[in-house]
Length: 117
Image (cartoon, rainbow, N blue to C red; front, side):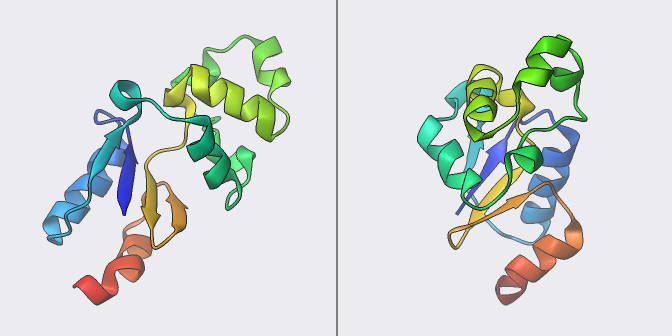
């Protein structure tokens, strides 16, 4: 079990606070400091579509030139972009029991961890 993200991201902060409030201790992996591997991204893309994993609502995406945005059209091009700019990955990414959950919704986390409550 591991939580991936960037510590100053508001959604990551909410997820981490929820985990603390529910006494759930999960290792945190900071994309900016610890990076992300191609193998890890490939494993996530077996469960979620690249269009879900690439955060196209965030500042990093909005700052990309239009050509760069247009070039992201499949898993390979999305992986290349995420390796170059890990902050473009939707956050947080929770790995639990071999499954990937993107973003933070209290109800989703509650159902994922209800046996721990």
